[in-house]
Amino acid sequence: MAPMTTDYLKKILTARVYDVAVESPLELAPTLSKRYGNQIYFKREDIQSVFSFKLRGAYNKMAQLPADKLKRGVICASAGNHAQGVALSAAKLGCRAVIVMPTTTPSVKVEAVKARGGEVVLFGDSYSDAYQHALALEKKLKLTFVHPFDDPDVIAGQGTIAMEILRQHAGPIHAIFVPIGGGGLIAGIAAYVKAVRPEIKVIGVQTTDSDAMARSLKSNRRVTMPDVGLFADGTAVKLVGEETFRLAKLHVDDVIVVDTDDVCTAIKDVFQDTRSILEPSGALAVAGAKAYIERSQSTKKPVKNETLITVASGANMNFDRLRFVAEMADVGTAREGVFAVTIPEERGSFKRFCKLVGPRNVTEFNYRISDAKKAHVFVGIQIPDRDEAVRITKNFDKHGFRTLDLTHDELAKAHIRHLVGGKSELAHDELLYRFEFPERPGALMRFLDSLAPNWNISLFHYRNQGGDVGRILVGLQVPKKEMKDFRAFLAGLGYRHWDETDNPAYKLFL
Image 1 (tube, rainbow, N blue to C red):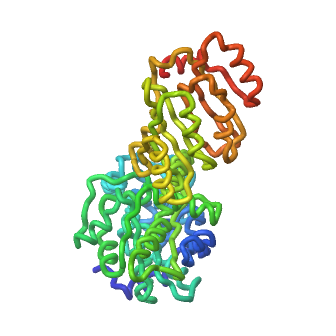
Image 2: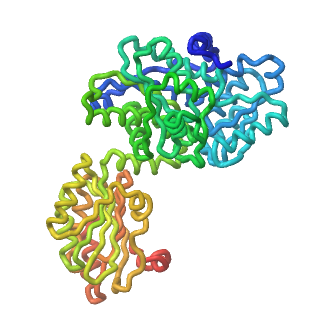
């Protein structure tokens, strides 16, 4: 029989976690709090020794195993953080640990498990695939399975986070936001909170493509998802636990679903307040708290001047993902507007368009000559808020530049921006040059102003990469009889430049 709430209270109060875990700090996020008009706190589980809360539940389970089972060893299935918790616990307790991980697990997590002495087996595309394989190995190798979430001892271990939160913040708390994968973390937190401070809301957060708990609660039964998104790999679970679902039905007030842009923005928000980088699943709670505040603004009871706790659950970020996160964070905060603009293919129109952009910071500029009468430009512009994209679109249209706002177009953001261009029969007498210039606000516009109007721009590519120099690729149609003037122009420009006209990649693709 599953433990009732009072049993969980006792199990959490007596959980053995502090042999390996620390009481993580509860930190106010000043920048985020000011922006959202509430006191937003981060419960910093990302600073545990395995950079995740998962060691709490794993160790509590393993520390209570009978000696004979511990001697034979343990096995688990995990997308990474639970695996590190099991490996660390096994090293502390002196037992064998076999870890089955999905093949999609970030390498940083795989290597971390190996470094702690875990025997890694890679299998399947998701946690659910790895779980089934681990069950087969459990019988074959006669090991004890340590479930990542659907086990009372694991749930109780994770519940110690709630015990710490309520001890660290004795004042009123409006809500605690918790990321959900299989549900172990929120089950433990909710069981403790509702037993001690039932007035506090416990709100789960999931991504749109891995929302098994949200779907299950809505259907009043556990729902198996056919596929799950892998960006937030730590919460990519197709089927939530039986016991975690039971506890969620009893104690969880709501589940908020957010998208990838929201998560990337939350990672940036946490970085701005802490200078720490969370993994996508680790930032889910922050994304959920922001969405909760924003959605309340259109109701009769907007959330204001309240205390909101967010569990920053992990920081096992794959470094290769940072570029994507940085790019999508600007879109997620509506700090980058993306537009397709049609301008006349005639001398001077390019410069007229640039004047309309004005002092705004251009994040991207893609153009390739393709039509004798019309030019199609793909441009990204830094904007202060969502409404600015609408104003920019109207202003371009007003001045005769037909504009399509692509700010929320996934195809444009993920793919089209990288595919603008190609070969063109109109690009005769074309010279291709790379330029470097100091990257600061307005630098791109100053560069464009310095270009002589005599030569038609047939190709243009610029992307703000956040570096100290801007890099631009320009195609200019310069008649052969004007080459002397062109060389004089380059000499007087003052920017570093390279002639790429004979580059084989240019010949092949452009």
